[in-house]
Image (cartoon, rainbow, N blue to C red):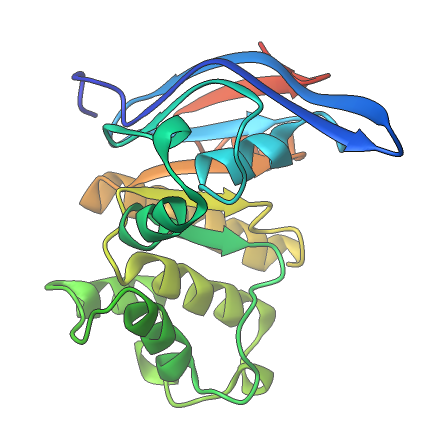
Length: 224
């Protein structure tokens, strides 16, 4: 783990939604540092604010107030277009529902992420990552021919192909059985240890959070 400047730095983060003229405060002054190379789990029940935090850190939403720095870049000063560009360069996403395109092979689902980022070749060492994920021999298959665990591994490969500074995982085992959940969590932990990938995972499951280096708890829009 790098002990220098944090790769994620959040101070006084607030987010308020307005629904039917009634303000809903999803985040209430969140402070958070994540070191480069750390595997952090944010644990909390539904409605605690962890998904809002996830979307802001990934540049998918703008905060109402507060500071957000991602790998040295200040999200507060970015337009929507600039946040989109930052996402493509610095953030990889792994979602609960995989979000694979059903008509494309696993290889082509991974290639789409490269295309969106304007890249044409896979990074050095990516073949090793595919072997680590256990899907190197499954790349010609479409999602319907893959198990849930294999689909999630393809989604992880897609998230890593552009060498993101940060991997954000949103309930990555929520659709998997126990065996596949444990396999995917072990893969995330190995990627963190073997290539130093910074990972922030949100989950409601304390057993999943136990795979991380550090756990913080979110409740009522605050971290503890």
